[in-house]
Image (cartoon, rainbow, N blue to C red; front, side, top):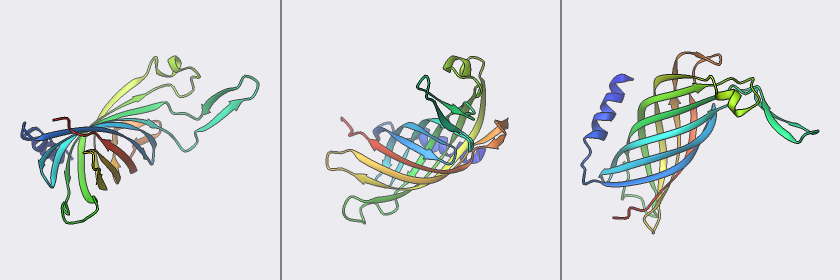
Length: 195
């Protein structure tokens, strides 16, 4: 994993400073929760992009359910682990069929690797302050393999849908698990370059 991370970081940092840069955002859901992400891409060649992705993930567990107190109207979760993660990945995307398929359709494969910062709060607390006041942070390495489709739009924007497998090992057991590996699905919107 460390060798893959080093390779991706070298490719991303050696990107041509004159390369076209595009940024975007999107939403992710997976085996252990959901969240949103911000991303940036440099076009190295027509078929090759490097970039970064920073995500926020709210991790859910199997036993977590929302409950409503009908006397007060307040809704809260029972069994909440109060665990959030911030994966920050360098990435490289390859579009093997770019320009060969008509109708603005570009399949791709993507490899991501980087650092994951997890914050473990107090799941039994009922208030936001109580959950996160004495939280503990953990840092570990992680990665993701993704396949997806890029749908370029006429106005210069893009919509990307993807499906992947993510590995998020923990340095120790957090909320009863030593990893949060699993399947992920994402949809992203890439802004038009203003240059």
